[in-house]
Image 1 (cartoon, helix red, strand yellow):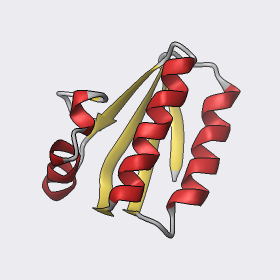
Image 2 (cartoon, helix red, strand yellow):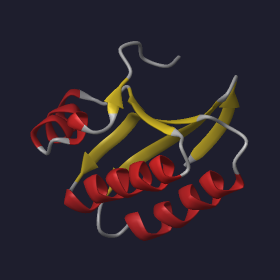
Image 3 (cartoon, rainbow, N blue to C red):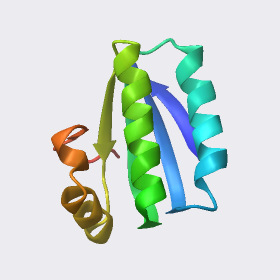
Image 4 (cartoon, rainbow, N blue to C red):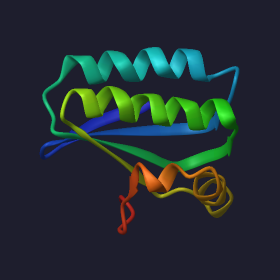
Length: 104
């Protein structure tokens, strides 16, 4: 995981897989960044994610709830087609918005 601040957003770039084995560590690291504040929205850049399971979907939805309670927004950017399909079928996009333009 890498992160950067761009304007008023915290951009979190995730790599490889989001599954049962990686979710606990990612959750902790992402929550630490979120709770530090200093932004109005968080963008999860999924360009480099190669696999996501239901635990990963739960990780995304949990961060959405945390941010919603803080009156902040969560967005998803750049998912690969197979990741995009999982997020679409699981209903994530009915709750978390996908950015129409990919990040550079």
